Image (cartoon, rainbow, N blue to C red; front, top):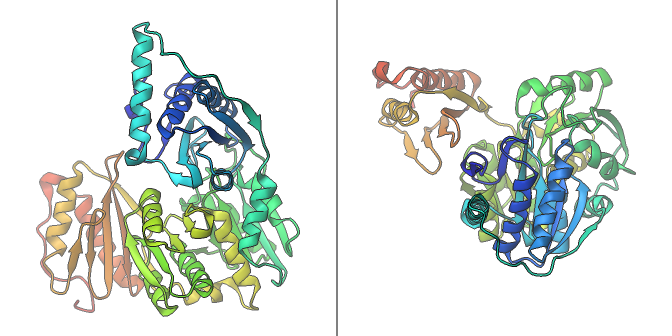
Length: 474
């Protein structure tokens, strides 16, 4: 019997194909999804991985076996599936493993209106139903009689998706821009040509060929090595900016005209300012890893910043609870109330193009006011004991004068001129460190001291100095 504990994650299903996730399991997940959501109809999409069309078709068979009608929209980005779910008012399933290597695949699920499905919102129950069916099959028990099967139809939503996004951002008056787009052989190569068609853009495409083996580089722009090609091409072309999408194109990273990466926190602040111009006094969600710049900019533009844990389910819950107009994460996930509180990198990209094209300056000049501090980026460390290493860091920093701590998501230590967050991975023996300070030298000093504590074996913890390493004496 399949071990679902290895593939059912906090927010989705993800595993090796076909060893951990195969067509039979996909069919069972389709049946269980309909049972849990009690849906009369669902919508299904998939990315460009070789295994994705077959898995999507199997999921559809399972869904219709429980009496639901299934609309298959075929090749799409994850945010295109969210659009279909919101526009059609149906629960949805997206077959993708995002930025993971080609041997992986998975399922992202949502309820009608793109509402998230995670462990606490249906995924645990779906897993339990699949396990029960597998157990019945193992003992040769017959499944109870099913209702009359539903129907399977196909529908293309790409042009409707593009039109809806363009209705949310006014690009009619922007100046011509030269933009390099690296799709990483992922779904950006499918969506960008249609969304950008007719705009005053000189588009330079990179790796637009849909290829789930990712022959050029991993479709994970969060890793700096996967931005190198884009950065070089922006400089070679003399482009105004570069955009990089991940495998399922729900995240977008930005490179300025100098070939430098623009912090997702700066993009969050920029988009927040634009959204607040449309919705004065609105609420903006940001996770606790984003820069100090984000809540500062939100307040300066008359908005209300709300800090939350890392992860799309937490962001979407807060979006719904507070009625927020926008939310952003350090990982380049951007959420919009006008997009059913779901994340869409494409809509964020359109905001950047509108902001840049609406004024004569460069992107680096435009974002300078939104990028105010020195950040380390996320640094992962493999550790022998997550709790012990975190305790060592707490002991070294928490008692210093002027320092505060909180445990909203991992350990956050905040001083007058710097802060850092240390979070454990839920799936690997890793600790993730993010540091920010008012200047690079202070950030480097705090980062290095924290990393020394994190990476020292548990039985060889250095004695805390008790002194503050910051030159400002905070």
